[in-house]
Length: 88
Image (cartoon, rainbow, N blue to C red; front, side, top):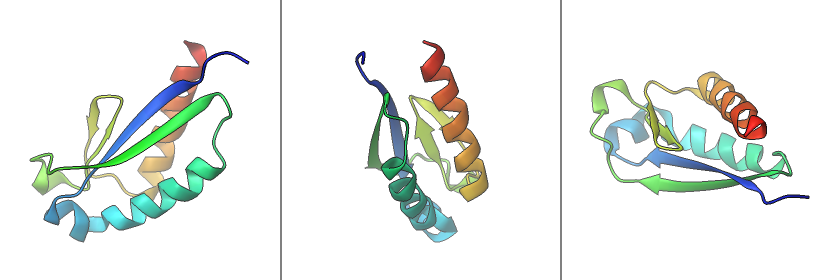
């Protein structure tokens, strides 16, 4: 098997994102990573405030900022990024 591809995921830990559901996203990510693709390494960290408060929760994936992320949108993003990584 070749070198694992990396999906960097940063969850904004600012107050606004936290009150808008950041913890639900963190929990979902934990469960998802446990069942992820063998060829992808999931690297998740808390990020300081992304200054996108009015549009939170904010998730940054491989440098791309995504606003208003709920559990459904997070699942879509994960699947989209995995497809992109698998094609590289």
